[in-house]
Image 1: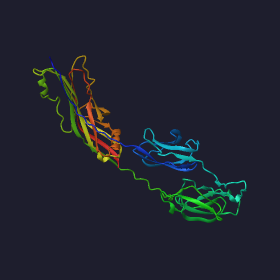
Image 2: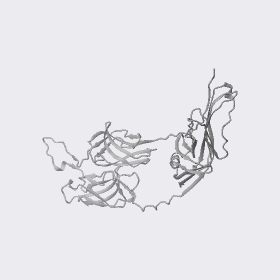
Image 3: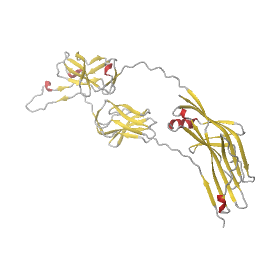
Image 4: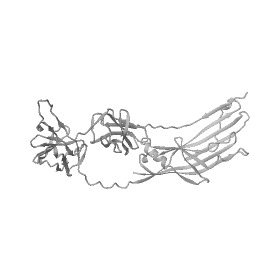
Length: 444
């Protein structure tokens, strides 16, 4: 009885990468927000590439969209929200149970507020009513009325040194001779920073230039007002002051363009299959590799398949598949803006032999060779005459490598022939290429 033995050798290279993407909402995180005020939604994004979508939720159900398209970017991101209103202008209900959700568009990366917050109605006038008994009579002097400061607005940002009009509701008292005192305070602990006006007519407005010295990042202030007789007072919402605008910086210099021409480290590889229908001892015998060996800086690709018979060892089918790995050190272009990437390669020799007969075909032994990167097909190319060269555009692949390979400075590809063949037929299709060079143009 004849025995069938199979010997298979495979050489594979694999490389993997892991990327971390996340979004963390900083605020809101609980508390109360007043309807109609400006509030800054903040989040931290890492590893994202797309824009963001911001939505409002209540008790686990979607209320609506706050911002359908927020520009992409990583680090601390902000969005100024008019509390209580959706992007389409719709007003939401007052109450608790609200959360904000920020999601990277076209991905599942998202985060929502850790704690629920409440949206409350903004009061236009606060009046404290004394308790009324049957024996008492309410007098107007018993009511405590607060001055409503309407500008600066809650969450507003104003330029230091630029005129700003403070406004308030002057109708809190019906007395044209009433004077008000206006001062600037720290919003956190209400410490007075300076007097803006010790005495000003109650006409509802005052022109003020916010001092640039208060334009500290993260500092917030309020305008405090009190009548000079100290019967009525009120304050604005908290706001910030930013430094005066300066002349824009000069336009950036035109980037420097550089071109590198890199020759690769070439590793010629093969896989082989031998199917023997004779004695088992034949498996240990050496087999001569078909075709000539590649010389220095030369690639060997394609396949060789032959059905043979011998005296002692009756080999049925011998198969070889040749391919070349090209390793380019293009580290100077890593993380740079790639403008051009072309591989130039020259045909240095061929060896073809197709069995005659109706089942034979040249379909699988033509001039076409294939380029792969990490087992992903990139391009094909053909050269019809020995000594001729072609240039293959690899721009998209090299740009992808430049964006992702900040640690590994090498760009690798495999070049193979068409490895299909006619079953159990004599088929030889070997192609040799020499002096491959990768030209990469990039901006510094």
